Amino acid sequence: MKVTHIPFQKTGFFSKTMLDYLEQKESILPFFNNFPDIHGFKNQIEEKSGSFSLESRKVLADALENQYVGFKTSEKTRQNLELLQLENTFTITTGHQLNLFTGPLYFLYKIISAINLCEQLSSKYPKQNFVPVYWMATEDHDFEEINYFNFDGKKVLWNREDGGAVGRFSTESLDAVFEVFSNHLGNSKNAQFLKQLFSEGYLKHQNLADATRYIANELCGSYGLVIVDGDDQKLKELFIPYAKEELVHQTSYKTVSKTIKDLEQQYKIQVNPRELNLFYLGDDFRERIILEDEIYRVNNTEITFSEEEIFAELEQNPRAFSPNVILRPFYQEVILPNLCYIGGGGEQAYWLELKAFFNEVDVPFPILLLRNSVQVISKKQQQKLDKLDISLEELFLKQNDLLSKKVVENSDIKIDFDKKVAYLESQFSDLREVAKQTDASFIGAVNAQETKQIKGLKHLKKRLIKAEKRRQKDLVERITLIQNELLPNQSLEERQRNFSEYYLEYGAVFIAALKDTLQPLQLEFTILEL
Image 1 (cartoon, one colour):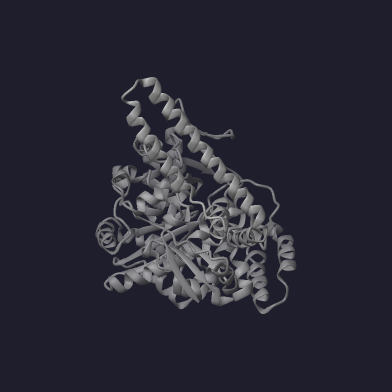
Image 2: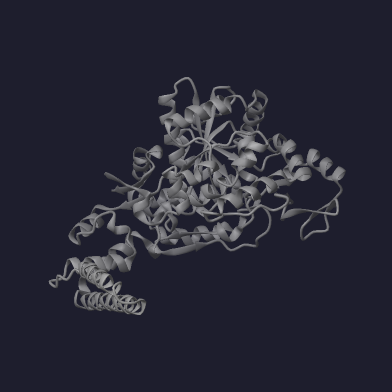
């Protein structure tokens, strides 16, 4: 096993928002609190210590005790569940949708980042306890985002009717998916493990939330992972005061809208708030709550409430009130003694919209940590890259740029067009000095001629590279093949592939290698040669 790190900036796959955040540029400083470094965690511990009550810890512990009924827990997870009741225990949280069979590879990277960060913090701050948490997005209702996973270039799809919170979905029809997946796997020892994991998870648990808990627990429970389902009566009771605040004052809409006006001056906005950022959740629907003429209406239904009625419903049935993308992060921070949220670039971009809202309602804003990203390369693939003289940084170039660079390097024709362009520019600069002694029309003619000749040179460069690509057809095909292997669909493989592809080849060694490799506070892209 060999590990290499390169800056996120060198991959070309991360947004300006995230790159500026990693560099702590002045333009983004107002939108986050403490930065993810050891000093930042010291400050965060102090802030969170005074804001999370023992009563809330007891509710959390009792809720999780109920959620784990019927599940085998490792000794370390059991210990962590008990530690959550202590004032000096804090969580490091990551979250993910309930994708079929964990979905894309980065599901594992998120969770292992959280586990490893807890271990790092425990070493640095031995007087505190740190518990890794996986927050299951059980209340999401976008089934099309989670009803498949990719295996060996094929899509394994779950066909069923949509409707309501995905965590409540019955797993009844997943036997057909299991049949399809099994046929892809073969009969090796690692294949048998994957078949058993899928069948035990989905065919022996009644809903998608329980199935996902089982699978995540089997893969990472030995490291002490605690899995939280926010769709819980007791946990929602902790959220009642904040839900009332939302229903009456719409504070999230007002504060986030103001933040967006400042943020959008330099950065892309990830999500926009509604005037009311709550859904009403039924057994087979999740619809927005809309306030019209002092009446609370549930969109696309006949359900309506007066203010008095909706408060009564909130007290009696808090589980029916579901936070949307704006309030879900806030709900998490209300019910967990959390220090840090680990997520991808898109997730962190919408967290950056929320700091002013957290301040307004007096809840500590967590540290935001960009999750570990990993490119797995086999020894054979690394040998191919070496033969093609492609560095790990060059691997991430756009394919056309990579091919152009390599055919020029491999060509017998050595013409440096950049130097020729620079030479032309210096010649026309001299001409402009002469032109200044005449009139403006001559200066215009010089500028036009410069533009024409430089454009012509660049066109010749493209023609030469195109000709070289044809002449070096074998090299072009080999480069294209290896880059497509490593970056399927010209995207990071972690967004395309499922962990089962690597588990089939490497078994438990794959997860152990990630556990040994991922360094969440290094803030660099990881390349893992196996």
